[in-house]
Length: 356
Ligand SMILES: *[C@@H]1O[C@H](CO)[C@@H](O)[C@H](O)[C@H]1NC(C)=O
Image 1 (cartoon, protein in one colour):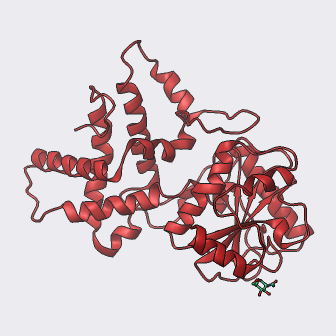
Image 2 (cartoon, helix red, strand yellow):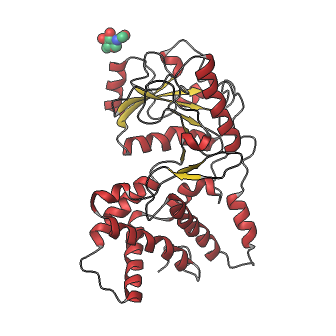
Image 3 (cartoon, protein in one colour):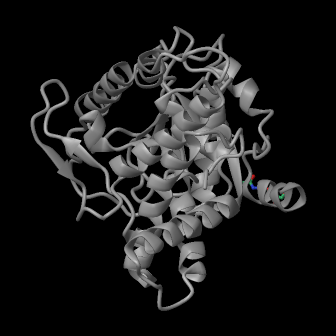
């Protein structure tokens, strides 16, 4: 009952069974509205340097993110192992490479290597929703057979819904590092709630720091230093950006999906402000970083009802007198499908209806 098509060899079934059986039991145990909030929860350590206490962000579910991540990793690594027949594979080097990967100075790049940072990309490339549905049902049949139980009703509709929710919550969006994970200071004052869905995404570079960050430690430190600067020197309530892309493979949560940012003067209530860490006047971020901002984050926002499907991309400089997001990055975003060269709302709205 392997989840994977690669070879159907000896090890594929076990990894698949763990994830699919747990998912199946979670779907059946939850059903209805509970299903939508019953999968996964992240949490945070009390301290990034010497962590002692881990607090879950809400009531833990049967399928925590840690369990789901482990199941996804098992699927990815199991597939790799089952496809390796030529030479004895050192499991320790596979695991070390997977969990202790370090990006080069240019940041993580496209050719999706087998690393935990790219878990969602690699999982999506291996597993389609329809295959996952079948496999969850197969796993449940095995589970019931072993227990001698008989299901009272057809599990297929619940499993179908569950797989949709799982794909939405755990693969439709890139991994977003939450505020508590990067060690954000509290918001100062009272935030303004955005009216969703928004219609714009404004692209920024941070300029300072000027170097792309290529590890979680570097990117988290950059987030804390920008937040400190925005709060203490600018006197703002919080870091200005809605989201920030590192070159370590992750998106970092700034003000997030629901709260108005301070990124694009006069337009903060209309769009999300997304910055890429670095100075992109003469060079570009890595292709992987660009794809996160060009495709993955907006696709996630659209599927979650936070951005309209006809959203428009603008560079910061189109709205405000500034060099941001740098000449090189501005030229790059000019080639993105949702970019509108005009800063005029009505012209961009017409352009959007004609093009997407
Ligand atoms: C935007 O374009 C429309 C249509 O060309 C025009 O009527 C309007 O005055 C423009 N708005 C601004 C603020 O320039």
